Amino acid sequence: MKLPPLEPQVINRIIEMAWEDRTPFSAIETQFGLKEKEVIVLMRRQMKPSSFRMWRQRVTGRKTKHQQKRSFVAGRFKSNNQKG
Image 1: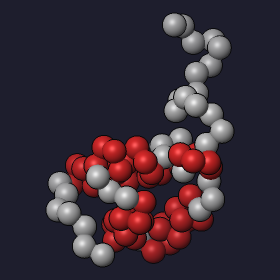
Image 2 (image 1 turned 90 degrees about the vertical axis):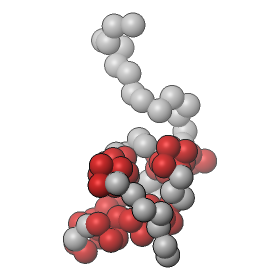
Image 3 (image 1 turned 45 degrees about the vertical axis):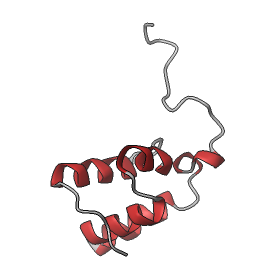
Image 4 (image 1 turned 120 degrees about the vertical axis):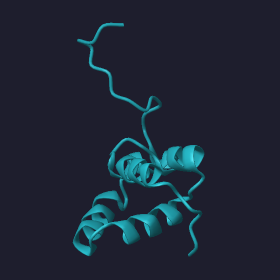
């Protein structure tokens, strides 16, 4: 699969967002134009094989990474102890 050319800082941000539990793939697609399958290809190319397997195992089936499976509306947790 051919990915569009991306700056190193953009690649780093996509990887960071892909590792975050509460960032859905749809947010990555909205911000960077990469679909879930393209993010997987990017992660495979940029990570060591063992790190990629660990990430895939972590993400596969995770409800928070797929917008349709999320049970919460807000994207961020906010403690009752926080101001505002």
